[in-house]
Image (tube, rainbow, N blue to C red):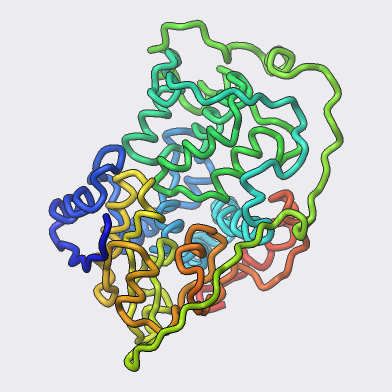
Length: 418
């Protein structure tokens, strides 16, 4: 993609998906299936079907009543505030478990804002020795011979979605059994997710690894059968590495040597800083500020969509060229519901220059790639909505339990207009 191009997204979905194939011919993976459709309409239907009581009872089971809302929250089709407000209104006190799990989105986001790109590195000294082996091809190809792990890879590649419990099992297998470098594994996994998010993904891998938690997460066959059923084990033909009690596995996986005392790293010493070149000078007499719709605010009801100024989304290969095909198509589904947004393809900065923008207005983000895309432009970064106005200390952000103790009471009392 060497030039900027104005894109008129087709209303017919098959034609629209083909447009993405044309724009990104090297995008990996299959097309977005009918079971996953981007956009606010699909998101609202899933939200209406969410059952907080069933979720609380069954969420850890692979067949449980999970909401499947994460890709829509990630891309801003629904705001976290409206999701929580809806759940609280319908289920009251019975929604506590679902609301607390939804709050992880806000929690990880706050950690990302506070610590920046440091989340891509170990936040604390690991509590157990970790390996640095490269990610094996037999894992990424889904041919480990372990049906449970290979199914995770197939779900990831096919759908871009994996149940959270299965994500934890898979991460533990790579980090603790295979001693793979968690950073490489997390990067690969996040790149294939429909709800891919650096903060929630990488900090979750660190939680499993024990560099963002008090202890490592691991599991055994009995636990997997309890929450995943017998289907994996019945098909598996190899010796199960998970078939032992926890004491035996702990002895097998982790050396008995003493591990270093955890250290807390202050935000000021961890956060990275992006250095922007001087702001561009725009000389066009007809220039004006324009709204930049990026991949975190794909909703026709976002406050910036009522601003009245021109809105622009850019399929920028520097931002999205590494994304899987289905995720690009998911965004196209979202954009077709946003008729006031002009869709372009090419370099973001060049598109705004071509359109004669004097400056850019958009929602704040901790995502460095998004900030780099408009580096040098005068940008008004509007503060993104927060679930609570309470300001939390760095210490409170190092564990979700501490965050929830402080922020939870405010979140549980919120209303749609509060």
